[in-house]
Structure formats: structure tokens, C-alpha cells
Image (cartoon, rainbow, N blue to C red; front, side, top):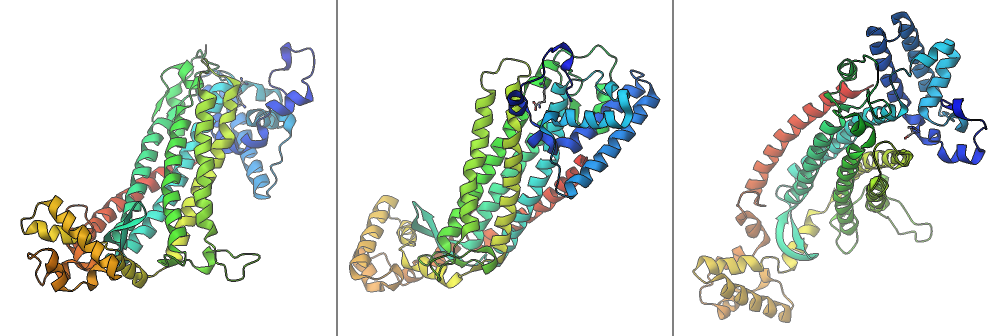
Length: 475
Ligand code: ARG
């Protein structure tokens, strides 16, 4: 079936039909397409643009179609016919089977151009809620782990070289904060998604007394897109989501990389649960962190989808262009990928076994308290630059003797400066180093406890916000 055969003398070439069809992937927009059509049709009836009883018949048939399609999908077999072109055609064709020519009235005062923009916005509202739900789950795991490891000492790194001791709790809360900003970006993006494009028609508006506010209210949109050309031409609401999703994946890829490193024998900071690791077909001893590697790897395709859509949109003249049909596969893939990656990271972290002894040994072993030795002298009035040089010379001595800073006896410290006293031995320990970092946002356990309490309060508010939003956007 075609929605536009009238002015054509010949049938479409099969190649063209297959090349231009979006039904193989956009069928999954059907719940949103139907919800949008029902709201549109009710408005047409209430405004007397079509007779109210006819509107009611169409609405009922659309509700039946929704149910039929839900059943088909539940059986795992949507298998739409490519000749149906797109999801809008598929649903209108089925409507025609149910109500006959009356089906033709549904498309009054509407174009597929504003229709598809509406479908995508309805879809994305739910998708954002779904991504947020998984991000919150991961945040919950991070909070629990951080609470268990407020006092667990590990080396902090810069340049992947041991830098200064931190606590594992502090390190994990860094990821909590990243996800918190990710959620804020999603929330911000949601505000611009949640605007009704319908009523733009093809691009110029429609010559019927429609009520866009009524449709917006029925579908839970905050407002309507102000300009009809913009409503059908723009996809920046998708670009924003892709950007937010890509940033989430970049954050997850860093966490994934740390899991890969930490689960290696060289680090030994954690062991993944057997259920969250895989083996090798040749090397019997292997336990590989494949889920973490794939999280890192899948980041590439999510970034790719952002770049692909930016490139598709670049230089397109107003208003709708068929190029924009290319916005869908990447979107669906990104939504799936981000949701599943957040989920797997939560499961992987929640079941991993951390190795505090290994972390403590690594923190003690790498001169990571050299800054503390310098700061010790600073507190005794030595300019920081000079103190830095003295501490550096002490490290050189330790390296030459094959010992750590914690092993160096007081007499040897004093060879470098008479200002060193007994208490330097304590100051050079990782535990004292961590305890001393009491500045706001620092790694001292007392600060981390405060940060944790504050994070928990934000988290509770965020959970409330997102669960209310999820209820509101379900079609
Ligand atoms: N399948 C199309 C898309 O996804 C729907 C809009 C088609 N509009 C048109 N005038 N050809 O963009």
C-alpha cells in the first residue's frame, strides 16, 4: 500500500522501494505512532474537523491495532512487509482493513513530517527515562561500595603512575559524580524533547482549526514547537541525546578500563565474579573481563552514531528532507547500548571482590607519600620548591637502596634535613597521607563520609524525580 500513489503512472521500482523503506527498523515506533494518532484523532473529533463518532471509531480501531502489534512483538515476530514503506503506512494500512475508507480521515491536518517528529519525541521521552533508570542503579551500586570502602586505601594515579594515596570510596564517588552530571544532562535534554511538533503539517502549518495545546496536554508535552518549519526540520533534540549518551559511554569506558586493569594479575585490585567474566577457548587458566572490554568497545559505536547524525544534518536545507530518515537506526542502537552497558557495569561492580590488601601494598610501595614528606617540611617553614627537591632526593636514595619511603629510618631522613623529627615516619605512611587530605572534596575518610551523605541525599531526590517522570511518559 502507498499513501501517495495518485500522481504516479508507474509502480515504484522494487530497488527504490527497498532502498527507501524504513519499516524494517521504524516499526518499533508503533506504540508512539498510535498514541500520537489517537491524540490527534480525538482532537479532530472534538474540534468538529471530522465527525466525533467517526473519530471515536478510528480511536477504537487504533487501540485494537496497538494490542495486536503488542501480541505480535511478544511472539517475537513483527516481520513487517517492506512494501509498507514505514510505520505510519503500516498502521494506516491496518486501520483501513478495520474501518475501511474512514481510515483516510485520520491523516487530516497532519503530515508524516510532523508525525515522525512526534513519534521520535514520544519514543525518546521513554528512552531517556529508561537510560536514567539504569544510570541510577549503577549510582546505587557505587554508593554502596563507596560506603564499604571509605577507609580502604589505594594508590591514586596520574599518568597511570602512582601519585598520592586515596581511598577506594573516594575514587568510586568520582564516578558517582560523573553519572550525576550525566543524569543532569539527560534531564536538561528531556526538557527540549518534551515539546509537541504535531500541527506543523508538512512544514507550513495546516488550514484547519486544530488545537495543538489540546494534543500537547493529552500527550503530556510541556509546550508546542513554536515554528512549523522548525518543528519538522530540526533534529537537535536527538543530537543532544546522542551527545549525552556518548558522554555517559565515555565515562563508563573509563570505569571499564579500570576494571580491566584492576583485574589483571599485575594490579590484582579486584576479582570479577565468575558470572561476570568469560574464559578462553585455548588457555585454560584465563578469566577475562570481557563485559568490561565490550563496555569500553561499544563506546565507539555510540560516539559514531553522534557523529553520523551530526554529519547527516549538516548543511540540510529546511525543512524536512528524506536524509533525516537516517536518524533512527543509530538512535535505537544508542538507546539499547547505553541502557545495557549501564546495567552490566552495575552487575559487574556489585559482584566483584575488591582486594584491600593489594591496594594498600601498592599505595605503600610506590613513593606515593613523597608529597607528604615535602609538605612536612613546608609546615616547618621550608619553601615548597626546596621541600620538593629534598623529598625528591630522598626518593632517589630509597630507589638506590631498593626500599620504600615507609622503610626509611629517621637518621636517614635527617641526613637530608635536620627539620625531620620522629613524626615524619608517621607522616610518610599512606594512612596518614589520606587522613591529612581534609580539604573540601578531599580524600580524608571524614570528608568522604560527608560527601557520601551528601551524595545519598541528592540520589534520593533524583530517584523521586526520575520515577515520577517515567510514570508520566509511558505511552
Ligand atoms: N519514514 C520517514 C522518516 O522516517 C517518515 C517521514 C516521511 N515523509 C516524507 N515526506 N517522505 O523520516
